[in-house]
Image 1: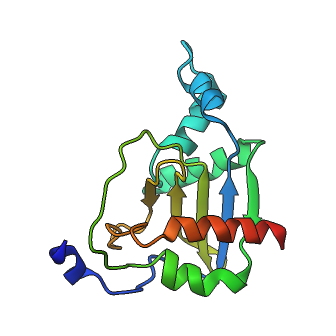
Image 2: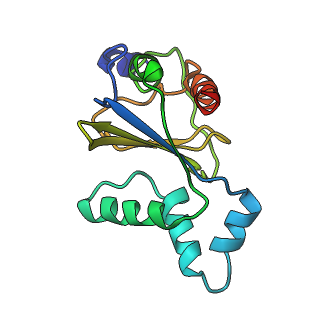
Length: 167
């Protein structure tokens, strides 16, 4: 634990951004598993598996595939996050934090919440979150994310999503 905390730059943002888009894919577990565990997986099932199960895309080809996939799903809710939350997102949620302990969730994540971070209209990062089990995937592989959600980040992020939908 001490070794990780020594490497962390407290509150260093994972992403540089001036815009955040939140994609939410409202699919329940049963519907998701029906799609991906069918004897013959449909094209729709393959798209959902790619979006909801795979970690953040890294290669140029994966990023192109992601953009095409997210556009093709009719259920996706796509919402710009209000800029009034940017400072908190930058320094309190999607930022390096020290922690006293950390745990590793043991589940099969379904990344229903996807955040795209942009600077000057260009994508600078992505975060995929499974709120059910607390697992996550970040595109910034140089960020130290071991303590992510050990300080209540997901609880606050859920509240921001809820507040943002109301405004």
